[in-house]
Amino acid sequence: MHAAQDRRPLSDAHPARLILILSLAATVGLGIGRFAYALVLPDMRESLGWSYSAAGFMNTINAVGYLLGALAASRLIRRVGWSAAIRGGTLACLAALATCALTGNFAALSLARLVLGIGAAAGFVAGGALAANIAQSHPERANFLLSLYYAGPGVGILASGLIAPFTLQWFGPGSWWIVWWALTLLSAAMTVPLFVIRIESTARFAEASRAAFALPPVLIYLAAYFLFGAGYIAYMTFMIAYVRDGGGDATAQAAFWGLIGASAFVTPWVWRRVLALDRGGLATAIILGTNAIGAGLPMLGHSTAWLAVSAVVFGVAFFAVVNSTTAFVRFNYPHEEWPTAIAAMTVSFGVGQTLGPIVVGAITDVLGSLSYALNVSAALLALGALLSLLQRKVGPKGSVP
Image (tube, rainbow, N blue to C red; front, side, top):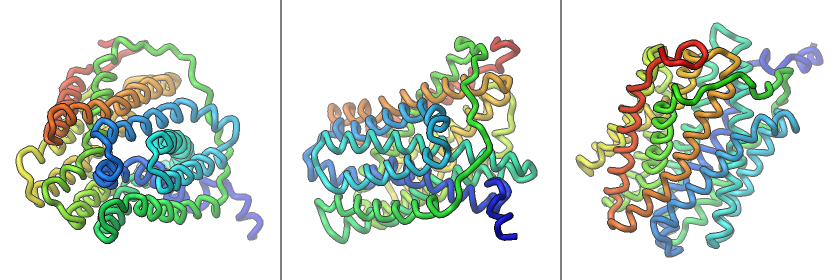
């Protein structure tokens, strides 16, 4: 009987538990690897003598790595398999995190952030595709099961928010490298379950579709998604520095970051009806507009309560924008065009989040205040919402009716 259980396909054995374990790749690669940088950015910038442009570049190069990794993920999975892609990508993230703790050299840190982005993409895409396969094996619970996977980054944001601010407060200025060690150890512990479970699947990662995909009917939508990529990453890169510059102590920083992470757990329920809207870019416009409001709220006040509202409003929408673009593709294109359509969305978003941090950092250097950076972030998100609102449904053969 025990042997028979060992031969069960992955999707038949405790699907919720398996998807939660797979989500740890996203927790390490994105929740900690990408987003925790904002928590140590102020101390790194001061200790290492960086400009805001240099600080922003660290998230730009990470985004470059993620874009490269996402575009190569399907080929990697076909070549090495699900298990190696998920585990190898997560191990690459661990090595990059450790490198961040070992050196203050700008070139070495840039390389580490690049590798971290590539590894995060490999683990996230492979884990997400396998989680989707598991969820589809249980259609009555598919939406719930898949939402468990996308909570992974929120777990990483929440965990790093509870660790980094207090570590910096305890050890004092210049202790950014200790934070990276703490996050590396946390990530290593979170990686262990990925090596304990059996990651196998009979699912095949399909070759990219050759079905025709017309760009002109969705150029407005792609531009909106580009603006989301540029706008959200600026907020997630510099907002902790803004909280600290306004007098926020470790508790305030941890609470702010934790609220963003915790928002991931309520996102599926908040936006369930909106995501079901099959009306062109309306769902994305509503969610992205909410995201813009959250990003703009700090400009109206710097109290702890006001910043908390900003974190909740931003966070609950931030985690839903990607879901809205997936819904848009599903509603507007036949199944055979999904891979090409999603690839186009990935590239648009990836270019946006690559340019966002360094451009907003340069604006801050020139104008001398992070307030301008956050104004730009909110404006980009608001413009993206307006563009999404203009996107009509795509008709047969990629035409706009």
